[in-house]
Structures are given as structure tokens and as C-alpha cells.
Image 1 (cartoon, rainbow, N blue to C red):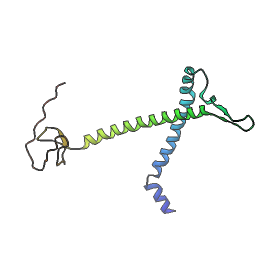
Image 2: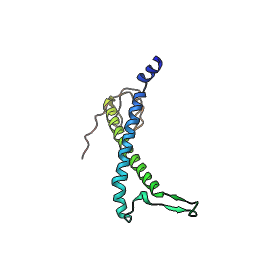
Image 3: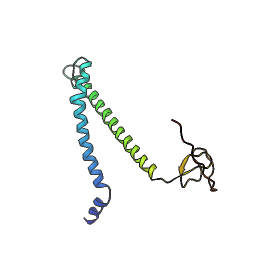
Image 4: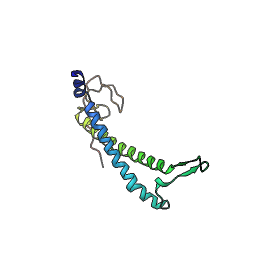
Length: 145
């Protein structure tokens, strides 16, 4: 029992549990948005029918079945909205983390092309000059706007 308690408190089990709960709530919000707002607005332009009502009867009347392709269309729209929202969230998070990382990294000036490079760099990523010998740094010229 102690081993499980250590596992649950030290690892990312709580983070994962919170992520699953927030993800389920986010999915409910997106499903409601697509089903209650987006799809009815879209159905105004497609003849006024709800997407969930769209379908076709396949086969003979006694043994056939209803293929509800409208529900599939709505689920596809739901997926695309969720995927786009997650894309925007990850993009914003990466932008924030990259800015923070860029601010935390000490910089130096390349003596050959005057670009800012990480202080620990031994080769300039822009001009590919080898930087093993310390040289006089060149101050970058002010950029014109």
C-alpha cells in the first residue's frame, strides 16, 4: 500500500488525472458548442435540416437499417473543432515556453556575422563559423525599420 501511495504522489498520476477530468469537461463544452450553436447555424445554409436527422435507409424494409450519416458529420465537425482548439492551445503554450527559454539562455555576439547566439555555442548557427578562439565581438548594427 505504501508503494502505491509513493507512486501516486511522486509520479505524474495526479497530473494525468486532472488532465483527463479537464479534457472531459472541455469535450463536453465543444460537443455542446458544435451540437447547439455551430450545427444549427450551418443547417440554416443547408436547407434547415439538422445534421443529426440526416440519414438514409439501406436495404429492404423488413431487414434493412438506418445509416445516420448526419451524426457522423456532426462527430467529424466536433473532432475538427477539438483538434483546432488543442492546436491553438499547444501553439500558444510553445510560444510562451520558447520566449521564456530564449530569455533564460545567456547570449553572446558572433564575431563574424554579429548575430546573437547562445553563450556556450562553439559554431555559429547562421554563418557556421567555428568559435573556438575568443575573438573581439562585433557590435550589431542598429536595424532600420
